[in-house]
Image (cartoon, rainbow, N blue to C red; front, side, top):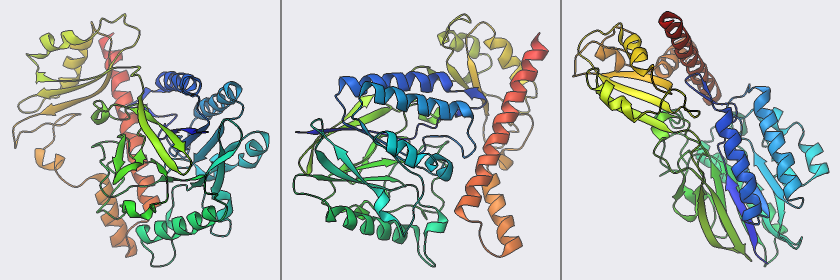
Length: 412
């Protein structure tokens, strides 16, 4: 009997987009996913990391996760669920109730890696008859502390996977499939311009697809938001279910359905996730915008689209945002950003006057890395760099939210 497995990742529950909440979009996706579990007769669900958006996520994000698991198990009581922590997840907090949920049902949560307890990474999956049809190596995101001295990310990942796959093979029968789960960046994987800009710095985190041996029937990956194969059809990122940045608005977001017969993946196909809220990017001059904005729905529309405006200007434009707010008044919008564009050398910035040269200068993350190295003589750790970049993102979102609120008050 075939094992039907559904692979998803990078939910980022609790995320916002420049101050705009995404709760309803996640709710719509999770309701759709519940239906897919039934319609596709799914035996096992794999969530390959970044289930939550931040290490300190709101209670509502945890509630969405727990409510989904409750409803999924109510619909399919024999469902196997495997969750691994990603780099955004609070690994220890996510893993805290693991023993309880495993006792109550077949939900396996792996938040952290422990070299002395590799056995807990090995999870059996059952087909519709209740027979063990596969063994999964459920590897969470590996952090700097998981690496041995002088060991690179690639060397670390190969070592821990080799060890875990060897242990899984020890209990693997001929009729069973070997499956890998991971949250990492493989060389050749395509990233988005905005939300994944910190995934790679100088290629240091990229690892080759060869870390997954040929006898692994399927590799369920998380980390990159574009659904894609890397290397061959059995190694796949399911991608995020919703666009997490405007640069991802053209993605076809999906989950992946895998049908395994014996030790092989016989069929792999993407199930496209419906887009709950549109994303619109409009380019033009201030004079052209009144006509171009007519593509937007009227103000009373329930699902206001996310809107990005790329406005061609010349010279300083301190009143640009106020002008944009006035133009958008008749329409239903969630304004994500107004990005002035100009010829080389012109003076312009999102929030007011600034030089083009400054816009092309070092990013806050690069400045932080240089100052840290100057002060302490070494580069900041990956975790510290990510924490700084997350802080910068939060400050930017807060600034945008404050600007929008101020604009609304001024327009009253």
